[in-house]
Length: 319
Ligand SMILES: [Zn+2]
Image 1 (cartoon, protein in one colour):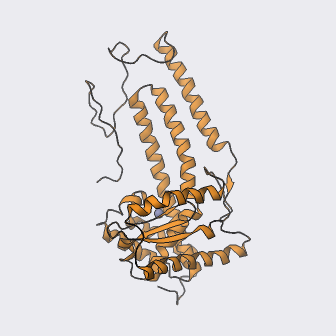
Image 2 (spheres, protein in one colour):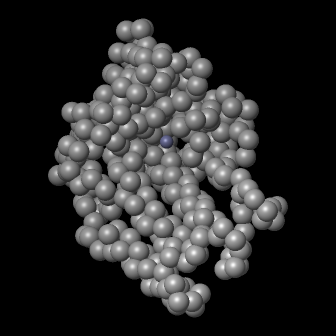
């Protein structure tokens, strides 16, 4: 399966089929029977285009203003200014809680192994407690601390871990069973905690509003369905790239939280090797589809470890 697929409906009718992966925009002959007439400027094609251009610019301007016009929201954990859809943590937490039951149901419910369930929860909170200590020194706090919940899912087929906004973190049994050390589990959970702390879901929602607005503007400009499809593709590609940046940022959080929790961050390299093996080098399936290939991430993680441990990884850390 190719890593990027765009769900384009097949164009029917008598139009020439493009051999490109997406249909090329074609000039629409105004005399073609059954064709919709231009909505704006019924007097002629030229004025119709002008109206479409004005409307497209207005839509694009509105999308940009909605996104960039507002001041950023300060992330309480990092102190950085960010553009998010929801500025209230309670809304994010609520969103995560609402989405959680469906996720859990989709993966066969929570694991019945109480001991494993507790182990996941214990290591997750060990990382969060270690983070608390570091934040206190910087006069910061983690607004999601109390809402974090770590759930081991019964699913023994899909090798996966994911997080919902506000602190719902999940790992499937299929991934859990393959992990060889506690440090590897800490690395996976640390990565997922990173998605929550950096508000990736929330940022994506804000960015999606911008992309959809811009895609709508391109669609209006072209004036036909194919342009709208093209615009949609542009939007998908942009959001995809955005997702990858978030994955690397979460890998960085994974390394950092390992350091805080006293785990050897090199365990994360082991996790990547496990993911690589589990998927035959294709990268993990499902929710991991936006994750960069494990092999590429190893180099990145090595770089981050060198940054987090400028004097080298000390001995005696938990593997
Ligand atoms: Zn991730």
